[in-house]
Amino acid sequence: MPYYPPKIAASSNGTLYISWNGATDVTSYNVLAGTTATGLKVVASVQKTGFETNFTLPAGVGYKYVQAQAVNGTVAYAGGSSNVLALAGNGTATASGTAAAATATVAPYKGAAAAVVVTASTSVMAAVAALVFAFAL
Image 1 (cartoon, rainbow, N blue to C red):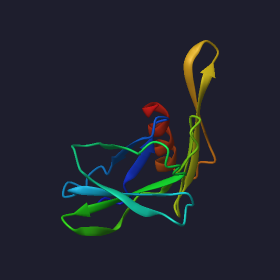
Image 2 (image 1 turned 120 degrees about the vertical axis):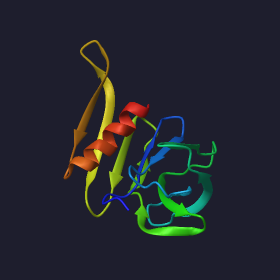
Image 3 (image 1 turned 180 degrees about the vertical axis):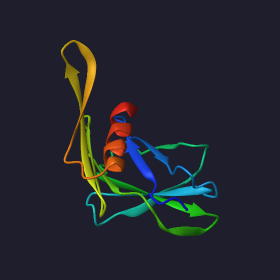
């Protein structure tokens, strides 16, 4: 298994993007969601589809936090859960976890279509997760 946990990112329309680089025996991902970061429940099981798997959250449910959990057959991997992702719904997402935290904000900048600002990053992987979210918008 890879050293880093799976990554999860979200677009503003509720589509989640899940990947775990190097985890070739993952067959599916459990999608956990909830209104609090500590009250997540499995809301779907999504078959892995290549390098990046996507899933669209149902509209109008009001989930504020999501997490992905890697599965092989019927067994969830120990250490195979992504950081919890806070869904802000305004082009901003915060990835949090024991190893790192990062925030990415997408906004127009000096005539460019968008600029990405990463703050509060304590690791390169957290910054990458935030940038993946930002470019998925």
